[in-house]
Amino acid sequence: FVAQCQTFTGNCRSEERLNMNAFKAYKACVPIAWSRNLYVTLVRGIPGTRRLHRRTLEALRLGKCNRTVMRWNTPTVRGMLQQVKRLVVVETEEMYKARKQKEANHRALRTPMVVNHLPSPASDSSQQPM
Image (cartoon, rainbow, N blue to C red; front, side, top):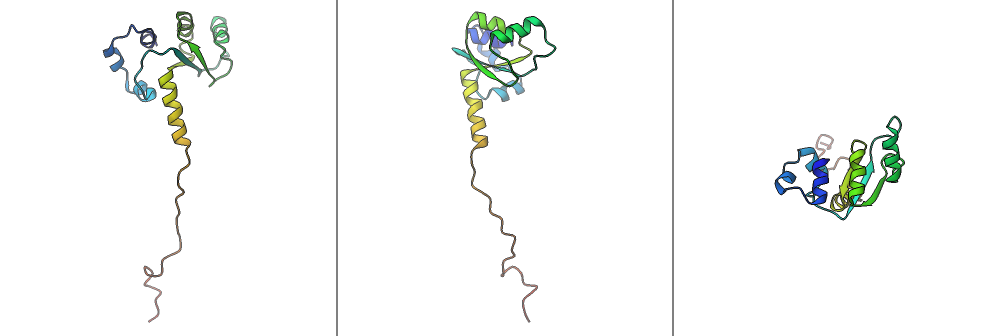
């Protein structure tokens, strides 16, 4: 996450962006670049966490798992995200839009597959009269 924070602030070198592991590259779908807004998703549960982390999540308006909020990319928000980095996933605008587009394409209607289980008369030569 530190590399991502540096990327958001623009301090990250281009070769650091290219050296992300395969999982991050797969999940990103687009190159990580600076963004005006950050999309934050709570992916771990709140019970059992420290009071400071619960208060930070409350300040970020994250109350339930798998909820996403949009926050401005400011040093204050980045500091809050650094505190709860093990509980949340941070995306840029491009990453968020690419993920939503990928989900929409996955849910899109497709043409139905028609299967005919009746044998065709020309292919069934064993039952022809002699």
